[in-house]
Image (tube, rainbow, N blue to C red; front, side, top):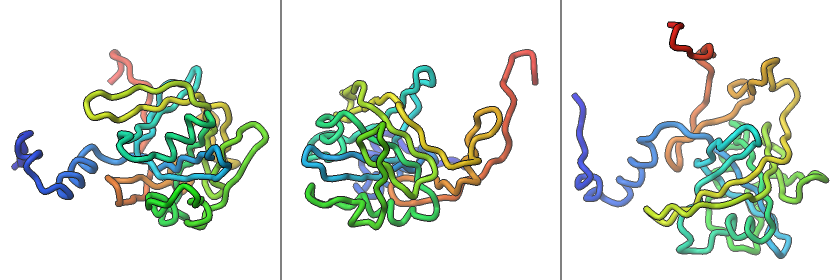
Amino acid sequence: MEKIFSLDDMLGMERDYRRNLMNTISGFKSASLIGTVSHRGISNLAIFNSVVHISATPPYLGFVMRPLTVPRQTYHNIRARGFFTINLVAESFFEKAHQTSAKYDEQTSEFDACGLSPQYTSAHPAPYVLESPIKLGLQYEEEHHITANGSILVVGRVIEALVEEGMIGAEGHVDLDNSGLVAVGGLDSYYRASLLKRMPYARPEKE
């Protein structure tokens, strides 16, 4: 039997219970580390579970930033420098990645504090995570304010991609499960991901 929650039920829940419920009820999400650098040259790293695909041609990705009711180093660094990286989290370092959610001061680099390694390329000024098997370099394109709660959808154009050798198939599919990537449920639960089946392109005349 299903349990039904009304809006009043959800709003009346204890704060932490409601936060955990609403962050996990939408299912698995990708775990990504977003790398930036401040106007003072200090590298910053923060974990996000809100990265979304915008388009393939041209390639755009976005992520949701919580309201700017407190300083958000990731957002301010992106607006100051115009670049950021998205680094997918693997099982080999997910605990270090999770630690980046701690509230370090702006003089502290999460790379140093959490034991991860910055990686730079000549084409992109923001830091990648060396340990990540899939890394994307983006340039800030635009943002959209979500009036419902004050969040911000930040959109970036992908200008560089770094993928470990052998992870891309003949048809362009990235081998996500064998790369050791993890999925995240809510704010603190990490899961192994595995492929069930690759389905054919769906057409009305084909069952």
